[in-house]
Image (cartoon, rainbow, N blue to C red):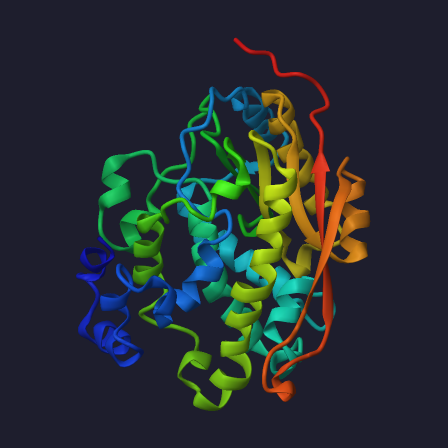
Length: 349
């Protein structure tokens, strides 16, 4: 299926794919060994898997209220915009703190916050995660139509339409620029089953169309691949993501909203954007009568989420064991599972 999706790619893109490990031929059969999968696996696991349809959703009224209050209920066509904002937020800047785990995964070779390659690399890696976690097109035509243009045309929800198990809320500036975004999904079975579920081939197709034609320059810089890009994949796939999976599976329960991403553009931080978005997710979860869960890092972030009703329920840590030692930061990053209980029971129709 992925091969069919890639068929419309220009010859130059096919040449790039062929040059870098004959990735297409390996995906369906030797996923774990495929260089392509080594790159995209950190984005699709955990929590990037296809899931059963959620139970009846009572969040439509809440989403309408949020829109009336100036919160944008974003749609499938907004996912690339969201990925750009999250990448900028996670990369940090000279004047803003980066997201701790993203900064840790970028490693010592990309520690300079003024290095544009930080955002470029994170945007590439985050794109699939956002495509997969964010709202999907409900129209068959939009879902199957080839090319980025049709994909971007996926409409936003109509007023009164329920979340369908996925929400992406945003705060937009006066000119329509996206300044902050939160992405959350309702998960309706134990999180331990997520890793074993089938991957969303549609999201892989969209990534191939939208990103693989022009991967970050670091992918073709042999001097940077070994000390920076390869270790990034190792830190993500072998260290950070398994720790997140473990915490999620242990504390989520059978029905909950999981906060995948939250990020505010550095230029808009300190203005309450993140708080408005997080409270929006909480209101949707309360309407459904289910708890929320997230995995954050660092005690500063724990203090932030505590203000929104989250309570730390568990903690683990990951240590950068990248070899050789000069490619390792040696830093230990704490990861904290935080859970917010439903404030009021849902009103089932």
